[in-house]
Image (cartoon, rainbow, N blue to C red; front, side, top):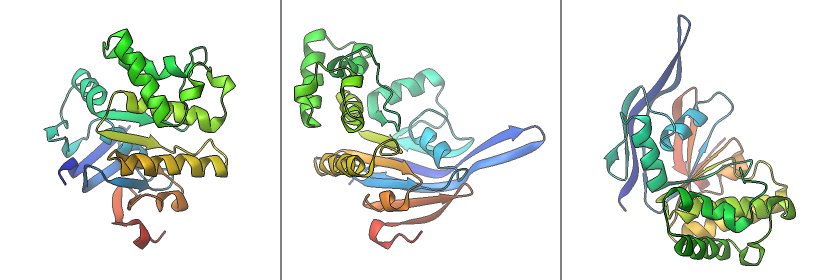
Length: 232
């Protein structure tokens, strides 16, 4: 399969007074289209910095990052925003839904920003809600939905722009165990349909539910193995 993500020797350094903090230091790996990869590490490991770079929310200090064949390493913030809108859907731990808007309106939101005509964006938003099993909840606002249903709305919103990459940051962190299992089942279904998934987590058991695990520690890749071979 073609490489969707190609990371070659990237670093991200921060200056704190006279001290240089190496949040990411010489990281290299690739992710092919259709993969399901978890990035795991404890707090302070550099995984959040790496997630921000993969998600085009930040740029590396050194090295090269290519997304879908395009070098995004030195793009300015406006160019990065365009890449994000075109290629990436985000799923966050806290859902980030608008409380006064219906599920349908929340899913439509990125399509509004993308300039999609009203009829088309409503049809696409309804299609995405159906895809995550919430077609009958389209008129509900977030406080009328369970935590798992809110996360499904967030996933539908992330999928609405038809991204090449779904980037999930601790996607089950705010959910109970049973609901977390349901969300992971949905991720597996989406991956089977061809969606490329990158999930960032600190949970070893959750990481193993991906097909491949990249473990980060002290800003470096400690392991990059099939999930069944991952040793915490």
